[in-house]
Image (cartoon, rainbow, N blue to C red; front, side, top):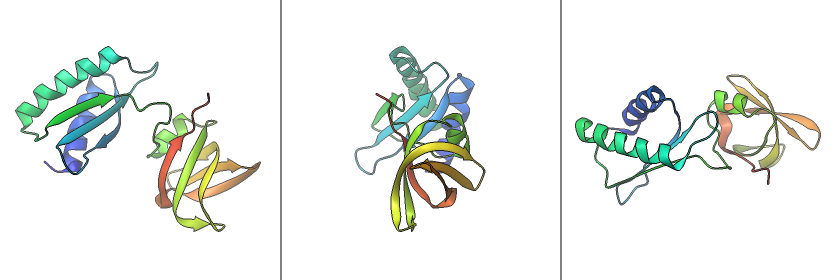
Length: 145
């Protein structure tokens, strides 16, 4: 099963159980499969354990090849990928790395100030910086500690 098919299977299964599939990692060696989930109010350890057992049974039926399965919350520095992620955390601080430089820079830290399907608005040093979503290499929340 390729990454896209596995992501679709996980998204359907996880959402059916009341969670959001935040991310899926398939590191190259060792057969480790990492699944990151979330839901309003957060994720507890018992949620991760129950979902891990459920997924192990599902993967046996679907013949998904893996050696180890980790199910966890996305953490305080949650990765942002889709427009819905940026919308959900509007007003929060985020660290954004671009594929190509914008105004001579690739790395920005600012406050999420809106998103469309093609553009992210990030407030950096009091000014709104429009960033093309297709050029965002990586974006994560900055924990407010």
